[in-house]
Length: 159
Image (cartoon, rainbow, N blue to C red; front, top):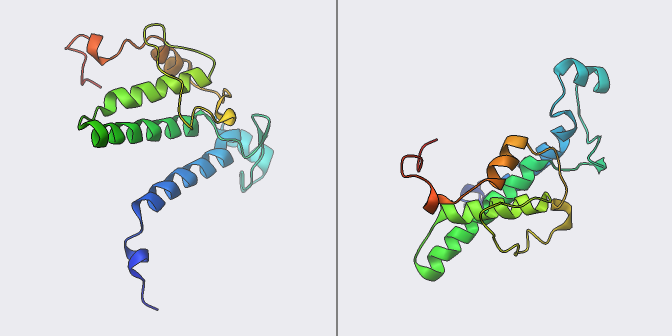
């Protein structure tokens, strides 16, 4: 049976959706064992390791902060793209940074120097307003973020 044109060239939106969904499914499956050593995983789940959702973060199949931040990254990229379409100016660094600050607000914290509008469909999802083991370095960096326009030129663009 020959492949259809759609199978050879899937809609990019379908591909992006599939990637986000696949990542979230894997994250929900592995979230319960994220910080466990292999021996502890095998001891708890048997020789096959984890093969089904297990209780974590108050339920089965709960995503971690990794999926939360992935969703906010995607939102920031989409907002940057739409800014480019509407205004002819794209600024992905700012739109993604602002998305991360909205994520920070879902964790019950805020940036000391920058206030962003906590708006948008994603921010309104109550399930994302739960701490799922975010790293303290990440939280601290976002709380202390000063924005690109105020960073010394020697720091801009360095990794």
